[in-house]
Length: 335
Image (cartoon, rainbow, N blue to C red; front, side, top):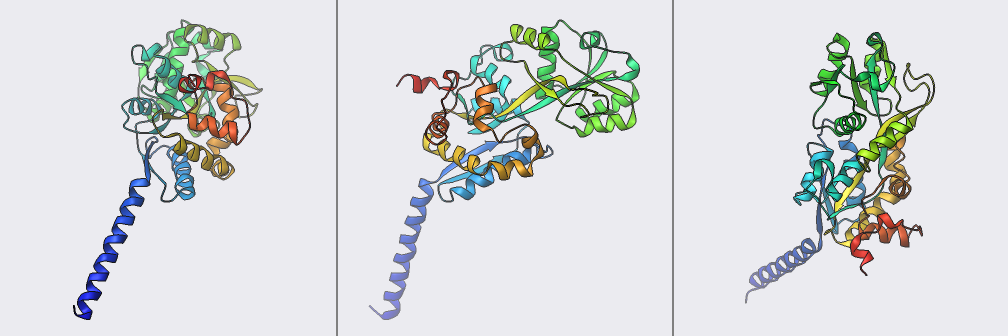
């Protein structure tokens, strides 16, 4: 065999071996689809930030791809269809989906698990000052903007139903709702977010009130719709009309995961996010304001869907915390 032929054969063998090595590595890598929201939403950046730290921590082992979705409620549907592996959603809606109650009656997803507690955000119920509305119960029969398909819209609608309050809903998009308030087409609306830009814009153009809820109202909400009523106190001065601390409806955004994602993969995802949580929170105001940094504490306080076994292992073995029984998944209780 001529020297050039031997050289060519050796090169071919080397390329073949490198190809086999690359194939073996690719086969070992786990590919995760992480649902998010619309790219137009600021919340999309939250998921991108988390995916980035996981990919950086485990190159060659885990590759997370962020998938644009229609939002939190759609993520629950996609998880149930196994179209995504992980996705953020409202903790209360997730519990309804897991338990097969309320709007998920007959559509339970027992494979739903959580990674951490997530972050809490208030839902402000806004009315025009000139409408003369002084309390939540006076919204009955009032023209009220409703944004169907949104997480906050689901919470507000269930809340009003639980209290037997029936506004005169005007269905429209979020952007149109602000314009409808300004023009007087509607007298009330709701908007999620801590110091929300849309409400600040309304305050700059008209006199508004942010109506407080009461603990009794939230208790009644939970009595009628179990696990759906969450609340938080917003501080005085958050908006011009908030003269003193008051109670607001709220929802918690939790990242849900399918039970069948391998335990070691979930452990690594939770570990990567935990170790980089200060960096993630520091660059995203929503997570900072909503206390995402307390990943386990938020789960213990607000969540009723069990943790994934990989998450249990991380919190129990690394953080050395006691896991509440409600967060232990059924598959671990059987052992």
